[in-house]
Image (cartoon, rainbow, N blue to C red; front, side):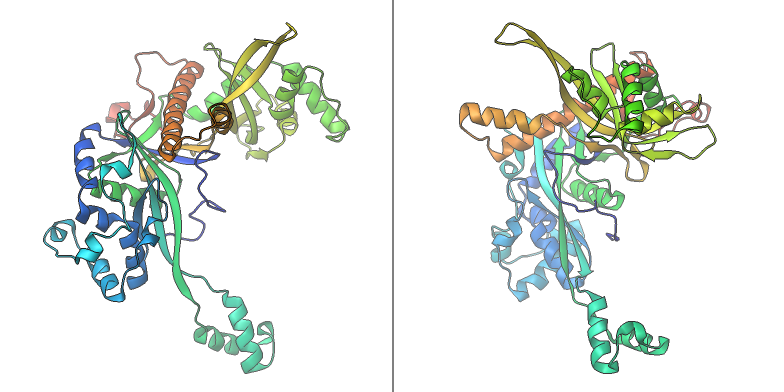
Length: 455
């Protein structure tokens, strides 16, 4: 189920830092059904990581389970006998109706290795926000088959594997068995019943679908959504309009010219620290009417002509150089950083200006994962999140509880989506009455099909 390369490379939890998030719709009216499921031991045990890990080991198959947000390895706190493993795996794989009449041993049902009760998943007692870990269990060959083949070749054939005849290689390959084991990967999942949104830290379409199915088993009604705007190729339009409206154009050109003649260490930094931060890290910086500043940086893709293939760039100066090469050159993919410009007065009475990064994410034509019914935030981060919390800890000398960390990140995700939607409206000059942003996916009437475009 989870094919090689389907997980993020080097996957680990990057919540509270840069990562890729899938956004799905959530029916607000399904809250009570979800709450009821969280209190039901038979439902929660069947959906748990405790059960999923047993299913993977018993049937050598992939399975999805959940743990509460505050206990990512809760399943490891309960040891299950071989007899009970077989019974739990059967229970977890029968249909939902059959579970209602299934009699489980008290040792399983009353164990502490799985999450049950709303309190274990609720992030805020006054807000319907929930958090959990989705755990993907994959039955996978964890041995190094190449080394096993090499060893057998030395012993049986008295020569390295690469020196065997083809017929001997085939014979050895057939007789060589690997070592299989359950491999787990964990993904944070956040549910906001106020906004009607689910956030999953992954862009793996099969995993997103599997988690959606698991959430629906828990009573949460999942709805497909997408970033939706009427303009064709709207992601490229946004980047093009931002670049066309950039400030500091001469400064970007000057820095790009310096980069062709000097090494990075030889380029003299500007006395204006604010401007230096702009030309060193971006190739475009545009002020929106709302006073939000939007910078474009690499990795980016630039098309020199309408019919030419795009060129990938990382360095801002390289992007600036390419964009000056032809009249048709345009940005079709890039990393956006939203900034706030803040003015302060120092202790010496002098006025100072600095920029605070509000959020960053990638904009390209893969901003929707249509097959999974998800809108994406690729490369998403709130750079100041960790600094702000660490500053608060130093001031109060008290660390927030785990649920507060999760709730704060969910709050930032919601704010980020609203900020992005508003900015895209400004850039594309969309009327306030027109629906745009993250909207439910639906088939448009035939006469509107050409007008409504979702990437």
